Image (cartoon, rainbow, N blue to C red; front, side):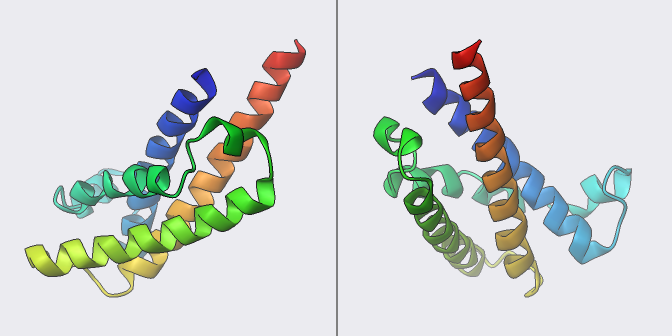
Length: 132
């Protein structure tokens, strides 16, 4: 249960970081400067909640899947990320929030990379704690 909660928390942090990184790349502003936060519209962050819901739908928070086959988990993670990005596009289309066209592919790449890195670090820490 702790591993599931930690994975969910790390995923949310990774997704928010992916959003900020994508906006920073698109806007060309400094990552840690005030420009990065000003360039990120609060309405864009409304779609952050889509990602964990899609991940849960694809079974990425089930305990047996967190421990076993990493290749299948990666396949499900990529598929779930693409679905989440498409749902973000749908959300922006329906709500008529202006988003740059190149934002979505950059968002998909940055969120996917951050989530994969976060999950690998979480697993390594869990293994280190179990061995300790």
